[in-house]
Length: 281
Ligand code: NAP
Image (tube, rainbow, N blue to C red; front, side, top):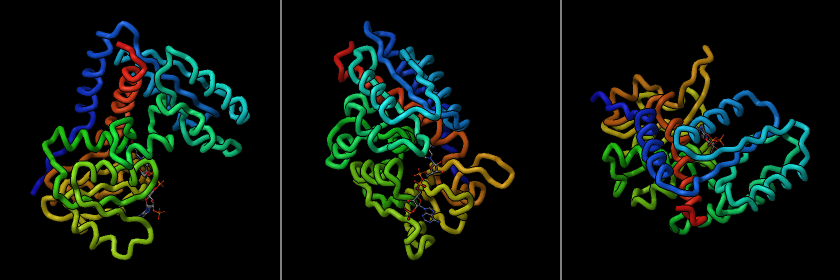
């Protein structure tokens, strides 16, 4: 079998244009505040991308580029100010924060109805009990891709490699919601290959280049590669040996151009969702 390549870039453009069309109808525009502390180059690239996406969607955006020596108190005060502002619907604090700052405390300070990343324990809890609400951008982007390509997770065995709070665990919840049978793998999983070979839908989110080889993919499986690694040549790559897996899979996502752009598009959806929640029409 030669797999259909799931085009995250094209689908993200479609999602953003749908968000843009809705925003264009609104009298009060959604607003997103992005907070960056320090000068991590990768974080700077992500923040620039988010600002660009906002521009494309007609979403008002504001950037706070704070120096690396910003104190916890200063950061919390900024979050508190943004919590109180009517023109700001979503607050995103770009992670990772410099080591001297307490990430957990900062994320907790963001008002749950402005938590566009869906990292606040309240929203994580809602996700767990199956309430509608914010969905974390990366796992939500994966679900949207499956939907777009007509892959229904119901009754399928979904194997997720990775159990982080931002990808693996919420991905499992969203798959469960769509009636998949879910297995979550991690570094203590005894036989990763055997688990992966049982997957109708395989989601790789370990952050280890080359971890998923072609012989770990079942014939006809849907392979979603969430990871963004650099190989020895410095080139962006996922966890999956793309060429080998594509021989077996029915559908597969590329890296780059797969889940990454979808993650960004879902942030725009979440900001729109927050604005609607705040009564903006
Ligand atoms: P993380 O917090 O480092 O979690 C990695 C998970 O993978 C852990 O649960 C770890 O298991 C598991 N793992 C690592 N090596 C493994 C192995 N050899 N066998 C089995 N499991 C293994 O990473 P993350 O934040 O979830 O991100 C995962 C990847 O996705 C990274 O490449 C990241 O850059 C990428 N990512 C992409 C997007 C996007 O927009 N496309 C968004 C977020 C993240 P333990 O729990 O046992 O340590």
